[in-house]
Length: 421
Ligand code: AMP
Ligand code: MG
Image (cartoon, rainbow, N blue to C red; front, side, top):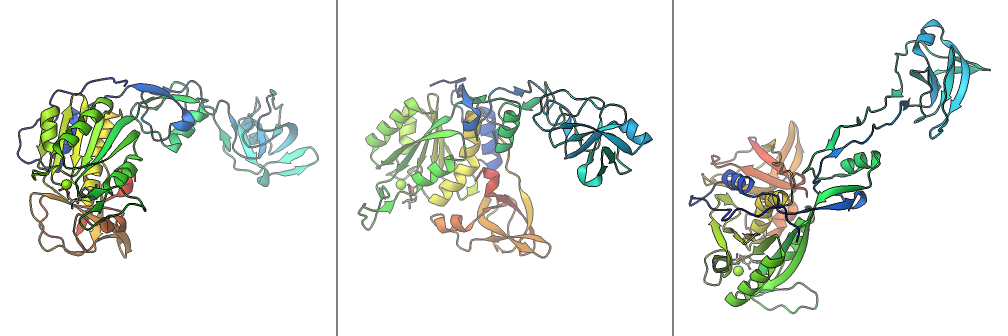
């Protein structure tokens, strides 16, 4: 596996009993680093990848001054003397011949065609009156009108995309406009996904399910969440709550992955073997994070493999993935971590008593109100209710100081799109 750096030893070590949300993020940003190597990637395959080397423009875009419209190109100085000009050459886009306009002459020109020597202004064809070989151009055109200057989109030598940039269709368009067909990107982070729990069974229509059993929904959910990041996922399936099996699966996964992501079994119940396994194989830091939904989470490392143990409850696993795994995978994968934007909106719901000293992420969505967007929340709180996630388009963030919410008050809303969903 190509790697650029190793993790710090004991990279999640901290001295607090309970961490606030912001402290967890600070720790991730401070301690994690890019671990993956780089590779060349066809531009067409580069969507969503993190650029590893800045792209410096090898040439101007556009390469030449060209017409922004179908019309007539002429010298503005001539036009100031006479608004009637003589018909000159006809120049189409893609015409590679070299053209010039003579004294008081206007070239017939089409959108994208190279501006002929001597011309610096274009009049739109709709505004011109053409008779025989005379073109009457309307008054009031400024020098440079309807003309696209060479390099006005991208200047030769300009840094078009910095390293760490997540390549979106717009970046891909820019790089293609420079003539590039390959880019250097960070290799995808290899993520192993494991669901733990004796009660779990693999989803499938043929699967018999008994009272007391639960279909594993977390594996499919996490794989889908991972799809918004440049990672490759190995789904290692369901591991029962048997110490030796948990240990064997995790040890095997650590040898071939950058990250192991588990759900379930991360609390201190007797059946929770994940915690004990990480203790035996590597370093573990069980994080009491002052958030809801969320606890318990386990962060650790086995050699150079990061371990992130998410809660088994699907809603908690989903929220914690967005809050902590997404930033971690971004940093490990060479990406620039951008904090999701919070939007102030009006609360369309109330909460009588919220526990202070913990940050809550409530599943919600926006509706249009008289004076701007209004946040609504899913009425039931249970962290097993995937329906709440389904109803939601984002998270309403209630910070540590908030003790209640009244209708009409301003709350902070993070659309799921801020998490790349
Ligand atoms: P745990 O964290 O193992 O104590 O699990 C907490 C709750 O989440 C229990 O009700 C589990 O049945 C449920 N759960 C754990 N893992 C999964 C999973 N992979 N898919 C669906 N539910 C799960
Ligand atoms: Mg369990």
